[in-house]
Length: 286
Ligand code: ATP
Ligand code: MG
Image (cartoon, rainbow, N blue to C red):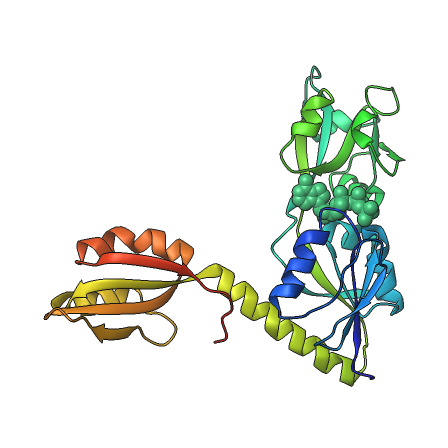
């Protein structure tokens, strides 16, 4: 029982779907009915707490939850004593300064003496200080984009992904001050037994992440070009080579990163590779 860990995930929002998907891809089963705030896995020693994302760093710092999945923006803003175990590669966004479209932007000194509305007073405050700019920070908890048009502030600092919300509110992005993605955070000083469960979860998450970055490649090649082809797709240890029914030809199977595949495709074809198949990998343990 002492090895059961508790993980806090966002109840409903931009992190929720991908967080739960990652956990499912790790082979962990659980019931996630609407409105449920707590759930237990049926096949892994883990419990889930479904919370607002703002509360997750605090719960993990206090040890109410052992782990949490939350945006780096909330981790840095809340400034709690926790460990970041892993970047998770989803919910990527940036925190930017924006001002009304018609304004002439002159650089960071534009903000000197001005007021800026934000839900991220700490990140913004630290950034202004690093730039030696004195501005008034107006903290509001939501709908930040509306602040300039209602006369609440002269600029805003908020999360941007495509920029369409800014545009709809007559604003333009002028400085990017922070980049964020979802991370796995951990309570400092969890017990050894719980640590073992955390290690198991990390091992599975690594396997899922590596699988996503890599592809399984199968191709046919004339035997006299095998050396060249093997050097282009060396794989995990080395590729598998199987003879085709047709004399003088082989089938080559290997694993490569997707980027590497696109870089090498022309050379593979030039070396005589044909019938190239690229197949997704679900999990990868090296
Ligand atoms: P809650 O009700 O849980 O407090 P919220 O409204 O504060 O939710 P969301 O909008 O669901 O938060 O965003 C959660 C996190 O997702 C943000 O803190 C940020 O890390 C990330 N995020 C926000 N907007 C985007 C976006 N447009 N694209 C990708 N990731 C985003
Ligand atoms: Mg929130």
